[in-house]
Each structure stands twice: as structure tokens, then as C-alpha cells.
Image (tube, rainbow, N blue to C red; front, side, top):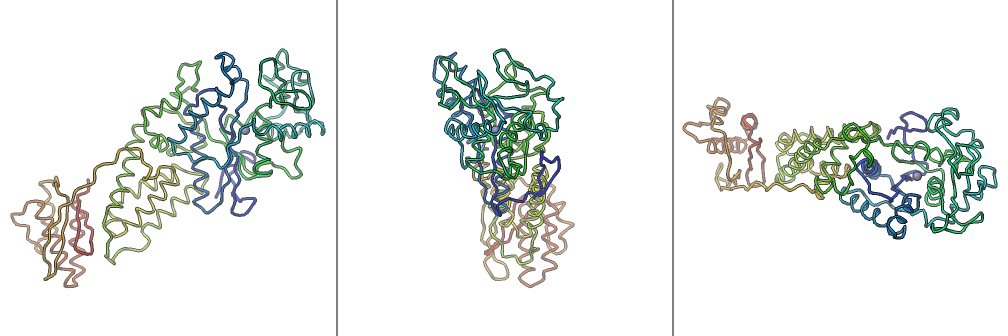
Length: 507
Ligand SMILES: [Zn+2]
């Protein structure tokens, strides 16, 4: 498959370094505050990418870290008079619950930074030894100017990066671009022992140390939101690659587009912040997934809450199509054209292989849903239902896990009749609201083969179906096909069964 690589600024073929296995690292949440929908967009995209790779037969190892120690969770804990762990567990628990509601698959490994202090300390020691880091009074800093390729991922040179960079009061760094690898603990702050003084790791070093510890460098895909390219991912490269024989640390750098809310960033200071959990209380989580799928993952997206209603209707239509296909009895009609579903499958796969064009994949499924009646008529209902189920599972909206209310199934009434001396079971909707003009529409299509003189709509449909069955029984397949086409033209879907036929009215 082809995927856009931020590192090379081009769409490239994703070829796993280790055949059949894709190793992925995605930067996870810093649970020092509530997650919002913007976070969810990125995690939902990487979930679909992971599901698609598995669908294509790859083994995927998916690591997503938890930044369980940072300045903000410490500040919140101190303000509330609770422990930092309590703050982290509260927000992390809420985030995990939201991810479950959105059917995001569990990471294979979800490491917490504080569980990897030993490899973090070892990596910092190695960077100091090789001249890429130095000990200052307040922290151990990374020396950016020691790494000439700094800025390459973000496509920015050092002069550009210097704009806005500064040394804050109390910071002992030698250059405004340098960043902290290890922060010495102030009184009352959590701390872990280290050769240069007790303290805690900086944010960037945890991802370098944990991706190496859990996946090994180089690995295949490093992911995150677009806002992580600089400085977070640039710093990860600066930390990891000087210690590698054969950089890059990640073959592909993949970034998801950001989300705006009514044209603005979501933030507490703008007064438009809403926790993800609160939004999920008001809307169907699968419909929100569907909404994101309809937009390209790299594009910026402006979220408007009223768009969820449209996505809810659209997703409901997909579930309806699936139900109609699945509930169609198996057909023994051997006139079905082979491979009518195959073309949909090929288009669906091709869309996702083209840099995860989820909007294209969704439109293929819409096409299939729109043709459900023809697929049923062609005897391809169960094949189409199976594909639709599989495709929706790849997108994370499996009909088995639907959260939208299911519509009541149509109750059929069955009658036992006789065609050419054999029993013929005819069933149709029990309470069909058949349009009165149906007879007038059907008459010119079937007469004089079938007389609909004085028929009510339901009777007209049944007479035509029986006439078709009789034509088949005498092996007059041309007439039988004509009658099926006539029924289809007035909106009647006919499905042959072993014992007879079932019909329904399409809307
Ligand atoms: Zn990271």
C-alpha cells in the first residue's frame, strides 16, 4: 500500500522492514487533562490504518505510549492536594473509556514513561558520552547544534527555528534550541534516581527510549498528530538517530490532520473546550467515526456538531443495507452473475491502499448499499452481506458492534400456493403500503402474459410472481426474466428461495 511519508514529503510504498510484520509506534496521550475530539481524530485514524494492515494479512505490533509524568499533572496534583498518580489515573481512565466507546482497538503495548526510567537514563548517559547532551544546574539538556540534521523532518533550518526560541529564567541551557532530557526534582516533586541527580524524564526522551525498548530501531511507522512534528518528533529523531548505525529511526513518519471547531482551535482559553466523554454522551460514537472517515486523514477538518446528524443517517443507511442483504434467504437461482461483489471489494481495497483514502472507501460502500436491491435480485445477497460486514469492520463500524438502534425487521406473511402441480411458498411484507398506482404501472409491462384485471396492488404482485414461477417451470426463461424485470421496474425486489419466492418493496 502507498502512504504519505512526512520524512520524504512523498507518497511511498509501505514495505515492512520485517516481511509480514509492521511495527508501529504512535504517540499517546498525556493524561494531565481531559482528552477532546481533536485527540480522538488522530487515534481513530491510526486505528483504521492498523485494522487495514491486519486485513491485508500483515502482523501489526502497535505501541502507544502514556506520558504519565509531566509538569502539568504535577501542577494539577499540587493544586488539588492529591498525588500525581491520582491525576494521571483519573484522566487516563476517562480517555480509555472513550476509546472503548469509539471501538478503538487496544494497543499491543501501552507503556507508561515511569515504567521505563532505566532505559531512559541509559539513553541519556549515552547521549552525554557522545557529546549530544550536557548537565546543567536545573536539567540535562540536549545540544541541538551537535546534530546537523536537526529540523529535517519539519523542513525548517536552524535560523527559522531560532525565531521564538528563548531561554526562560532559571533555565540552565546553553542555547535557546536545546531541550531538557532530564529535569531535576524541585522539593515536593516526584523523582527517580539518576547519575546526575534525582528527577524525571522530559517528554521527548520517553518516546525515543520506549520505541527502541519495545520495537527496536529502525521500525516501520511512527505516527502522531500534525502538531507533534515540531518539536516532539524532531527531538525524537535528534535523540535516537545519533545512536543508530543506520538511521532513520522510523521508515515512515505519518501525521494526521488537525481538527478545528467552528473554525477555531478547541481550547479552554477560547471557551469552546468540551471533554470527549461529554460529546460521546450526546452522540453515537460510531457516527462520529463515520464522519471522520468521510474526510481525508491529512486534511485539516472543521468540526461542526450538526454534521454528526448527517453521519448518523448515513451510517444508519449502511446498517439497513447490511440487514436487508443478510436477511435475504439464500437463493438457488443459478442465473447470478459471478463476481458482482468482487468489483466492490477491489475498489474498496484500492481506495485504502491509496494513502488511506477512507472517503473513497466509504463511497464504495455507499454504492454497494445503493445497489443492494440489484445484488439481492442477482442472488449475491449473502456474498454482499459478508463483504459489507468485513469492510465495515476494517473501518471500525462493524454491524455486530453497532450502537445505533436497530430497526425492527420486516414481518413476512407466507402463503402456500401451487405452481405447475408443485407447492410454492410465497412470502411478502405483512403490511405492505403498496402504492395504488402500482397496478397501473405494472399492467402495460406484463399484459397480456398476466391478466391484472381488477387486481388490488398486492394481488397484482403475487399474480406476476406466480406467472414467472410458471414460466420457469416450463423452462421459458426469457418470459420469466421479463416478468422479474417488470417487477423490478415498479420497485418490487424478488428473491427466489428453495421453496418458492420472497418479495419486498424497495423505498
Ligand atoms: Zn512521542
